[in-house]
Image (cartoon, rainbow, N blue to C red; front, side):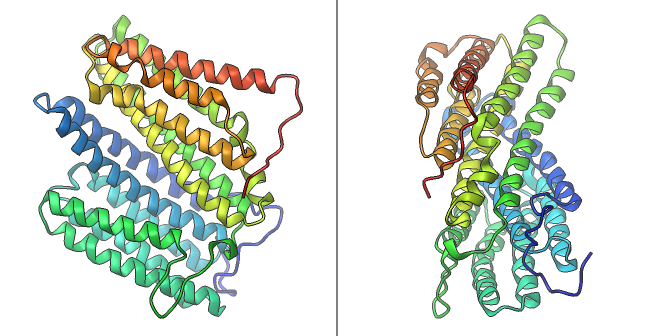
Length: 403
C-alpha cells in the first residue's frame, strides 16, 4: 500500500497489466449481482403466468436499466484503476466503496422498483460521487483535478434524478433513473462537459491500455461464471429427468461456445489492440460499449437457460425466445463489433449466425423450449468451427484497430 504519492498514474512496468487482488475481489460481488439480475428477469418471464408480452417487455426494460447501472459502476471503477496506481491507499478506498455499493445494489435488485429503490439509488450515487470527490482531493495535476471536478458535478446532477426517482412510483422512477443514466453516459462520451469548465478530449486521457483490456476480459468471465451458476442452481432444484438433463447439457455447451467465440482471436489480443492504438482511451471507450452489449447478451442467455431447464418440454413464447435465441444473437452482434475494433473487419459468419438465430423464431413459437436451445447450440458451434478453420495452419493474426 502506498500513501506517499497521491493517486499517481498507474506504473507502466512489467506488472502493470495485472489486476490486483482487491480488483478481483471487487469482481466477485458482480457474480452475485448478475445472478440477482437473472432471477428478477426470470420472475418477470416465468413466475407471473398471467403476464402479457408487453408486461414482459416492460419488465425486461426495467431489468436492463438495473444491469446498465451495475455496468456503469463497474466500468467507472475499472477505468480509475487503469489510470491511477491501484496500490495507493485512496484508490483502495475507492474500490472498497464501490464493492460495498455494488453489494447493496445487488441485494436491492429484486425489489428495486418497489421497496428497496432507495437503497439501490443511494448506493449507486455514493459510489460515483465518492470516487470523483476523493480523486479531486488527492490528485495534484490541475488537468486531472479539473476533469474530476466536472465528473463530480455531472454525477451530483444525475444523483438528484436517482434520489428523487427512488421516492416516486414505478413509472416515474423508471423515467428519472433512465434520464440519470443518459446524463452519465453522455458525460462520459463527450468528455464530461460542464458550462464554464469546458470538457476534456478522450483521446488525451492517460490509461494503462493493457490493464483496461484485461479488466474487460475479466468482467466477461464474470458474466460467463454467472451463466454456469444459474444453470447449476436451476438444475439442482428441478426433478431429474431426461429433458431437464438435456437442457442442462445444452446450457453448459452454450457457455463453452460463448467463451470459445470470444477468445478466438480478438479476445486474446484485446490488450495488444488497445496498447497499439494511437489513442488507447478511444478504443478503450469503444470496447466498453461493445462489452456491455456482449454482457447483456450473455445475461439474457443465462435467463434462457433457467427457462429451458425448468420448462424443457413446455411451449415457447416470444419473450422466452427473446432470451433463448435473442441472447446469443445480441452477443454475436457485440462480438462482431468487437472484431471490428480489434481487426478493422467483421467476419460474415457472425452476420449469418445472427440471421440463423432470428429467422426461425416464428417457426419455434409454441414448440418445446428445448428445441430452441438446441438451435442456439448448433448455430454457435458452427461459428466456433468457422473461426477455428480460418485460423488453422496460419500464423496468428495481429491486431489492426481502425482507430
